[in-house]
Amino acid sequence: MAAQSEIKEQQSTGQKFDWKKLISPKWVVKNIPFFLFLTVLAVLYIYNGHYTDKLMLKISTTEKKIKELEYEYKTIKSDVIFRSKASELIKVVEPLGLKELKEPPVLLGASPQ
Image 1 (cartoon, rainbow, N blue to C red):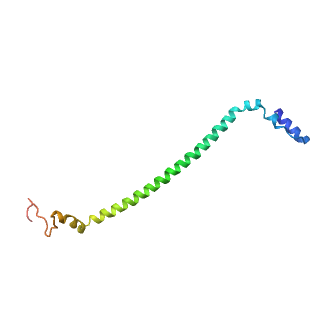
Image 2 (image 1 turned 60 degrees about the horizontal axis):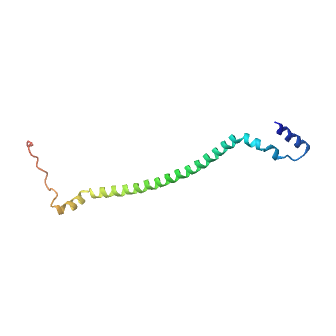
């Protein structure tokens, strides 16, 4: 409180204020917890910035992987649809000696109608 009254007196008289009186070793020791608090806040702020950068990098790489997998899925799906066509199946099984039936299959054990 005494320092504040001195500041007011010096301002009214037009004298320069001596900051060395205000920032004394006693004052610094008294405010160590506050300085530690500010230090912790600064460290947390820096950590938060680095954490956000890492998280954004992970998100962007994951998005790229998802797009690649989506393209791969679409390619494989179109290939499966193409290969499952009847005409393509006939071409694939011909070397195995299988042929397409020209007449309906015979049902065994069924009563004729």
